[in-house]
Image (tube, rainbow, N blue to C red; front, side):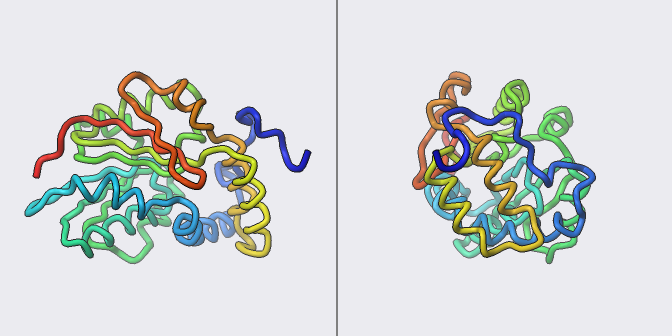
Length: 236
């Protein structure tokens, strides 16, 4: 068999960048390269068009929370796409990691994007809410109890819709990512951590099995899971 056994999630695998003592230079290169990787593999422009843009308000602001936003590349992209489409989208990019927050706040400012050093539970405790709640590549990082807590927080925080997007574990995804990233991304954690992420990620059936009632799992080609909760019909 080529590569690791992907029949089950590898819950013991740990991403290098999650180590608080990891090489800071490699970590910063990783944050810098996330924009490229997410642009190629995450499918968020398609998700924005199909699940976010249709519920953006006309003639007023829509608020969006990006949980576990890392270096903030997705938050900035969403704000730019919405502005280009004539919408006023105000994005709160929340991440509890001091290193991620520092990187994000040093990036060139994008109108409508605010960075917060916070967990979703902190925002719930503060009584905050947002029209839309999203995350990218977050679910596979979490243990079972952490995942359930995130979904409870998401329902409390989102007034319209929640979309958690993550990798869908598959052998083809692992082999193609391994081969496709081998010549690129030197001096960062992109390749090693990307392969670890695939090993830790859910299949669609596994995610459906752990998702509470009211959550839907949509498969997005080629290798994505979208975990979606509808709070109510969006105002127009």
